[in-house]
Length: 415
Image (tube, rainbow, N blue to C red; front, side, top):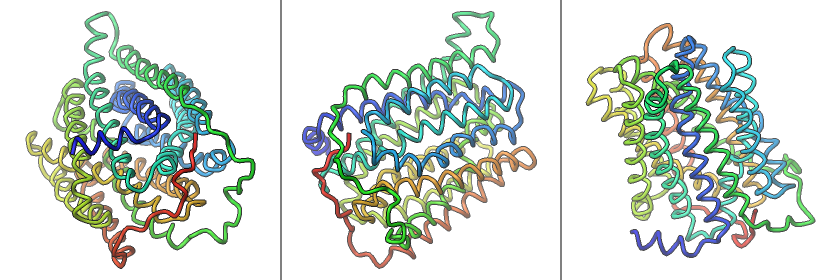
């Protein structure tokens, strides 16, 4: 298995290798930010409803920028878009951290996530167009594995950063400690630009079909089948995922370093899960894999709402996270391989747009439910939407007896 990964890694281009490394570095910074930001908001005195509204700006910004970003990608070099996006998102994240009023936190968070979308929208099409069909399972899982390892380091670092700053300067308040930790996380994101700058630019063809040209000819029926189950996962995930660190802190009374350690262990387990994914996929189909991982995650999710036992909750937290993240790269590949080459970017942007619109709404609802009822209800409702998602996936694609590859010229480079 290790030999197959090494063999495929040697075959991919230098541009792809640089993209993998840069993506992992910015992922490490964002993992620290995501771990600490809503804990920081809680320390500022915001309730769960307000926190849900503020952290939903990430999804809102990505959804607003997804389709325009897809159009921009067709006109400019991906390298320039990635560097520009990460540069300005870092600036706006930094400004968000320096402000404490809700309006500024919302505005700067929205702007930061909109520029972050320039990066997010380019990842799947970039890898798809710079790989052969034989390389894709390994490349997509390699990307996810590197990200998981980066998140593992980020969560470990993020869990202990507040304690480190407290030791270095005991006079700092908790708010100042969180703020310094968050600033460091954004510095790491910013530094990933130095890796992306090394990507060699490939000339953009002089004749390009406009991204929104021929909307009537788009494969809307296939897109709808891909989007509907994804929206169910988005709604279920938005109810619980952004609040799990608060759940560990409020319900299980975990310290910040224990929360960070729990997330780090999760990332390590996800890394192992994604590492073995190609072996599992070789024995089944992409659809069955997506359905099975979603199905088996539901009992663990529901159990987290039923019990307060630390060991049981952590076991369910790990299993749910591993199962759903194992399916992530396969789902991305599944989506991209079911649309025509000239629609891959449009499809990616459209799916991203609707996913984050629903995730934004769901996060706000989740915050309201937690503040006015409890965490339990959000886990139960999320489980129902996950069940809906896998039902839709199976009913829409069950007649496919083999993987349909995206009919594109794999030799075409995007950089």
